[in-house]
Image (tube, rainbow, N blue to C red; front, side, top):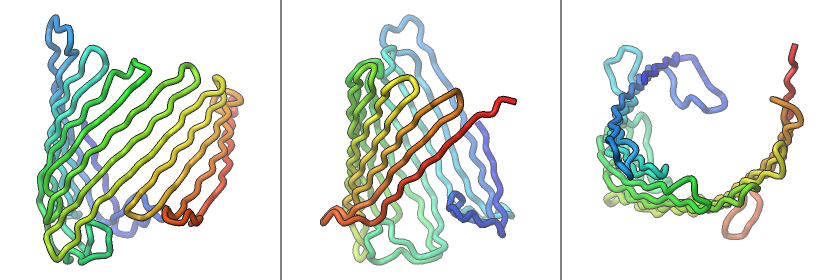
Length: 258
């Protein structure tokens, strides 16, 4: 796999999808699969090496670098286990607080190289009851990061699925910098009323920013490649449930076959 991109110094993406300007990005990846013969349990093994490099226009200063080595084991029953080892490099062009707590910021002009790894298991997707779990551990800027997370779901055939995901992160930086615990909890509902009418609802609690948000989307496919979407979203303060913002969006797409 290969991807490269260039963003000029005068390009400003007002919607925020391009957070930087005046850079090159090089993104290669390579994998190798091993298919064992006559194995009742393992379908194949996968080794994958991935890199993402951000550099300036002259290619003489590295801005960001992320490397990941992954070893996956895919089983015959569609479940799999993934083991990852990461190396990250980051140069700070501005002061930054990795904990987002308002504490002491890491100084501008500093650079960090850190390593971490993780393990994740995903269950048999053919079952009505599915689950996923994993953890990561390693360095983070000038400190450490620990995380554990998972997801459980149940499929009500043919009507849809319900699931709940939970992720916990602990970012521990040395004093006088901050340490914080982050908890994300998010139930999700995917329902199909018919072959052309669907409802998706997602909710999430974030203790770091004391926020509860919801997103509910109704879709009606009234003809091929033609849809009506009605989306409602809002955000609340988790301590008193006071509304921060809310919006109702309607989108119609229609395919003209000429």
